[in-house]
Structure formats: C-alpha cells, structure tokens
View 1 (tube, rainbow, N blue to C red):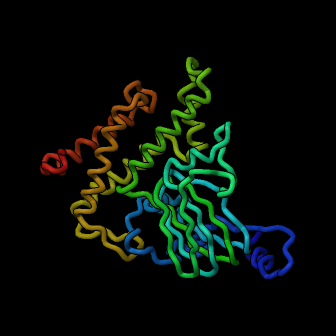
View 2 (view 1 turned 90 degrees about the vertical axis):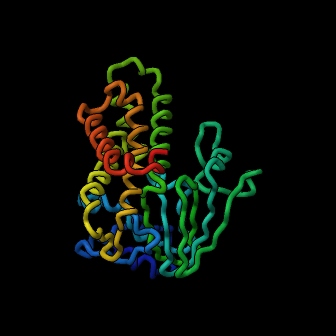
View 3 (view 1 turned 90 degrees about the horizontal axis):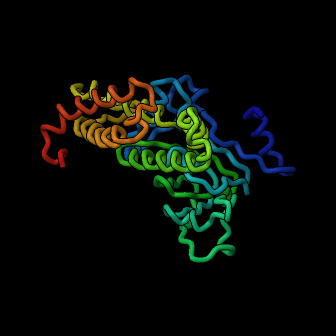
Length: 297
C-alpha cells in the first residue's frame, strides 16, 4: 500500500479493519537529510551512525496509526534504547521492568500479544499516557506495548551507545544460549555452530560476527577521530575528545569479554576476527588504558 492510499484510508470514517503504518523510513524521501532534530541527550548514537555510514536502513522511523491500532508486547531490537515523540494524537504505554515479562509467559515460553492486568497477579508495570508533543524514553530490555487512543503520528528512534552496549552484548549471549538449547540434539554435527549463528541472526537481528563488525567499526572510527578537533553528529552536535575516549574505553571492555568467549577461543569465527580485536584492544590500551589509572580499574 502506498502512503497516499493509507492517508485516504485514515480519512474514511468507516474502517473495515485497523491498519497501522509502522517503521516507515521517511528519510528515504528526503535525499539523505534528517527530517527531525535529534534531542542532544540522544545524540550519541552508534546504531544509526553505523547504518548511515554503510548506507543501510537506519533506525529512525515514522509511525502513523488509526485510533485503537496497537503494537504488541515486545522488547526493542538488539535490546537497544528507544525514544518516541508524538507529533499528534495520544498513546497509552504499558512498560515492564526487566524480568517482569517472565511472569507473563505461558508454559511454552510465549508472551501474550497484549497484557491484561486482570489476567495476571504480582506483575510490576508502569502505565504512561503520551499526549501530543510528549517524548518517552524506553530503557534497554524493557518490554512494552503501545495503543493509539487517538489517530496518532509519532517519531520512533532506536539507538545504541557506550551506555547500553553491554546490554546488547548480554542479550546476544542469552539469545545464543537459547538457540543452542533449542537445537542441542545436533550439537555434535559439524554445522552446529554455523547454524546457531544463522538462527541467532534471524531471531535477534545480528550474529556474533555482525556484532563484532559493528563495535570494531565504531572503535576504528573513534581512534581515527581522536586527534580531530571536532566530530559532528546529526549535522549539529559536537562529540568531544572525552566522549570519544569513553566510547573507546567501553569497547575495550567488550573486546576483553569477546576474546574470552568460546566462539573465539575455539576458532569458530572467521580467522581475521581475533587479530582484528587484539589490534584494536592494543591500540586503545596504548593511548588510553596505560595513561589512565581509573581506566585500568
């Protein structure tokens, strides 16, 4: 359906079914321009930086929904942060602190499409009504569901940075363990590891190799930018040297964990990955870790 046809549908007062326009990459229509200003507190955004630099689909979306359209109970892609702003309309959010979603699963481990408070006891959750012009921030790993109480247009933006990359790393490991347990009867086959990575990527959105490519790209770019006077993001914010050094320090810690993971220790990933990680680790160590007592701790 073309967007113009969807707008015609919205204007029709008699709707046979509810349709929700989600994950629309409006940026594609703007010749690469940013069609909204990112608030400065969300300017550190590795996820969209990587996507834009590689000319991949970004994580900056427009949602347009008729009254009573909804998004089912879920956690955001990669266990990323997200923020959302209503341009018009009203949304009702129900959000669950990490771990509470486990109380909602059935005997097969499946979550309900929508949470009904009358069907569950002893579940902690937060209800938020988001009006026109309101912004809401969703932390990593918080499951949530959203209902449009009025016709609504919103901006929705996922992002990852030094503050939550460890959540992404932890979620990646948990999902791999889950996949391995699901097909454990094939553990002794030669294709077991590669098949687990293939399933992991289809379920989680990235596998170990793509996660490593992501953080090594950000690290390499930060190392090259470190001696520059300024680094402008979203065409308006300057990321300074201290910020860059913090990014590198956090990536250093993730790389140490990766180098101790069985997939790398047992050479289950491409042969160039370990040397690349070691090289970046050593560069960060030489310019930051060895010069900073706090970083060593």
